[in-house]
Image (cartoon, rainbow, N blue to C red; front, side):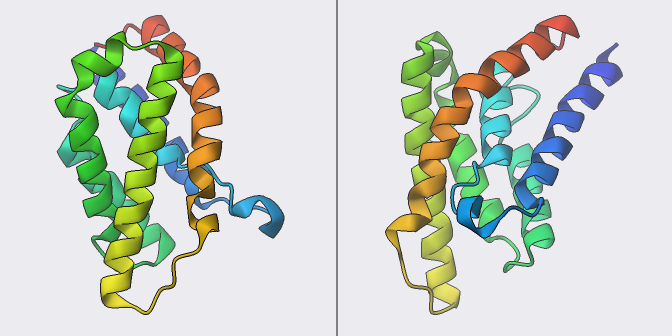
Length: 159
């Protein structure tokens, strides 16, 4: 049964990776939610003993490979964002969904600012306000993603 639970968690992470790289029209691509970060945050809050900072770093490294970015940028930012969630999982777990969405907004903004800062240290990248648009879409999608993942976790009895 435990292996089955691990497969379901891995399946959600793989689907989040696919959603992170699937082509979108340019008009809405700037608003692409941070699917992988949100799924990692959910599992980190729900099951911090199973999905933790190491998982976040590995998934961020895979995202670096898939996006063709400098290796380690997304991995480091994901690990730092996940550290915040896992270190405070008991508090975040007891928040209302609106409060959780605000936490997701702050963590997602931090993630994007860390990625920008790391890219800026290696390349000549210019900050644009549109760089933070995914924060808005991630907050909106949290209200859909959280109940969907919780329903899946309860249905498959993932512990």
